[in-house]
Amino acid sequence: MSWIVIQQSVPVFAQAFWLTLKLSFYGIIGAIILGLIASFLRYFKVPVLRQISAVYTEVSRNTPLLIQLFFIYYAFPEIGIKMSATAAGISGLIFLGGSYMAEAIFGGLKGVAKIQVESGLAIGLSRWQLARYVVFPQGLTLSVPAIAANVIFLIKETSIFTVIAIPELTNTALDQIGLYYHTDESLFVLVIAYAIILIPLSLILTWLERRARRGAFGN
Amino acid sequence: MHSGISILFAGQNFSRLLGGLWISAKISIVSLVIGIALGILLGALRTVKNPILRVILRLYLEFFRIVPTVVLLFLFYYILPKNFNVNLNAQAVAMLVFALWVGAEMSDIVRGALISVPQHQCEAGIAIGLNGPQLFRYVLLPQAIGLMIPATINLMTRVIKTTSLLLLISVMDVINIGQQIIEANRQTHPDGAFWVYGLIFILYFLLCYPLSAWARHLERQQDNNA
Image (tube, rainbow over all chains, first blue to last red; front, side, top):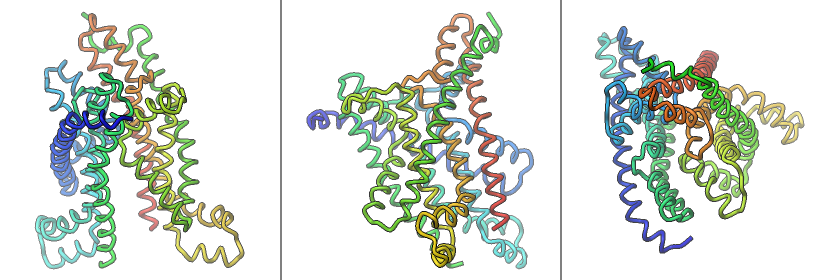
């Protein structure tokens, strides 16, 4: 392992680092929005749309991201939907992440104590008021640790974008190995780069979980 | 010009795809069996009050949690032969990586289940004179196992889904064979990608959906009993 090689590859990896962050950011924001929509459809028991959201959740959770990406990037153009690799990557991440976020959010909504709902009904809140003032504020707070866990999961999944040649971290490392045979150095920088992103997030997650548990004891 | 779907049934294509799926399934099964056994051992060790052991096992878990599986595969695929002179074929590398990864995840599931067995159960066991291994075998494990099962089934579906990455270290899995079929039929079936990737999509769903439905059913049962 040579430090000079590592130093020289830092600018290339820095670019890939930001791209990974950028793709993760768009994917995660999109996934949270999709997850909110899907879980609200389920919560309010909206006819038809609820079933569609249930089917979507099952399909998305029970298939690998890699084949979802292949389908979006290689099969969609054959039925007339063409998009760039980056757009396909973000779409894939949103498609995958949406269902995980929906489960996390719905899990939180379900976790709200029954007595809270009953009390709300007893003081004459409407269904919408109950959701707006009682269930969502508590439920969304309860779902924060699960959402944070999904954020980590989705950032890791961006490594799969390498299969559609998006120059994110993993793709860049493989590229460096292919071009210069600097295998050890490239893999070393790759692991460090993921560690820089994920270790702080994982510490935040542990902290959130601990807080959520303490919050639950207060009930 | 053929109608698209015929690409799946031309020649040996369908049985080749199923053959590729079998390789993925085989790697999943072997790594799950080894990984679950490893995870039960490590999970039990993580409940032992030894600070050094705890730190080591925690680092092992965090390493396999933080590094994406794609990167783990490449790490072992490139570094074992180059720096340790261990030449495994791609399938064996995949089994090794998956087994170590399952072991790490499983250790956390097992630890979580063991520490949720009420304290007084242990105390009662000690009171009737059970030693450490007996306590584990007859008191802790039987009560913890029910709690572990749904999470373990979910871990199985994760392993099956992760086998889609085998393509990256050139294992002849279902996706790799699918790509070959699409390339070989580019002339006669320009829309081959739609049907082949569509079929693989469905095959993965058919493998994973029953498992995750089963896990959810068990979880719901436990919630009702609680």
